[in-house]
Image 1 (cartoon, rainbow, N blue to C red):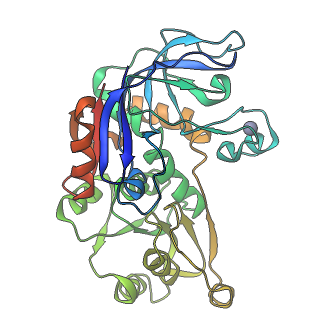
Image 2: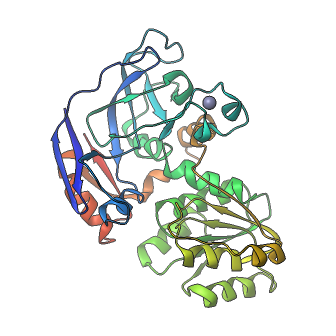
Length: 338
Ligand SMILES: [Zn+2]
C-alpha cells in the first residue's frame, strides 16, 4: 500500500507501507475515498513539533469499509463511513457527556494519507452515510472528519446562538468552517480577520458579513468598534499562537466566550487579566464524533459545503507537493486522492 511518510521536517515522501489489517476485534479497515493535509501537519513539516522517526501522516478520512473485526456491529463492509481523528468507544462517561475526543479509551487515527487505514473502536468512531454518496459530496464529507467538526466545535464552545455577533480569528480551513458553523447556528454578524484575498472571498461566500484586515491590538480595537465598543459575543480562535489568543481575548465582550481550537503553541494566559475580562474560555480537540450525524445530514441536504476549503486536489503520490503548497500558502487545504 502507498502512504505519505514524514522523514524529517520538510521531507514528506509517498512510500510503500504495510497494508492495514484487523488487529483487535473492534477494528475496521477503511479503503479511503479521499484524504487531505491538515494545518496541524504543518507544525511537524515546519519543525515546530519534533519529528523523531519516520511518521505515517494524516488523520482525516472518509471511505468504504473493507473489513471489520468480529465484535463490530454498527458498520459493515461496503458502507461509506466518516470518523473522527480520535477513535472513541462511544460508551465511557466522557463519550456519554459529549466529549469523545477525551474518551478514556481514545486512540489517535494516524497514517490516513494512504490508500487504506485501520480505525480502532469502529462502533463508537464511524458513522455511515445512508447510501453511497455521489462523488461531488465526498470533499464535504471528508471535511467533517476534522476541519468542519473543529470549526463547529469552535462555534459551540464559544456559545454562538441566534443573533450572536461573532468574530473569527484565523482564515485557515478551520476558521472558514467556523464561519459556516456560526451562520448555521444563527449568528447575525460574522466578522472574519483575514488578509488573504482568496480566503476573504470564501469567508464571504460561507456567510461572513465583515472582514477585518488589522491584526493584534488594532484588529481587536476594530472589532470592538463594530460591536458597540464592547467586543463580540463569541470569538472563534482558530490559530493557536500567543498573538491569535491575545487577539481573541481582546475582541470578546465581558460575558462573551472564546472557543479556542487552534492547537496552542507557547500560549500563556494571564489569570488576573482573564479574571477581570469576564470572558469565558473553552476549547480543546474537537469532539468531532459528537457532531457527525448532524453534519452529515447538513452536507447531504446541501445546506453546507465545507468541501470548498479544498482549493487544490492532487493524487496521493504528490503528497510532497501538497505539503509545499500549504506551507507556502498557495493552497488553503489540499485534498489527496488515493
Ligand atoms: Zn469513550
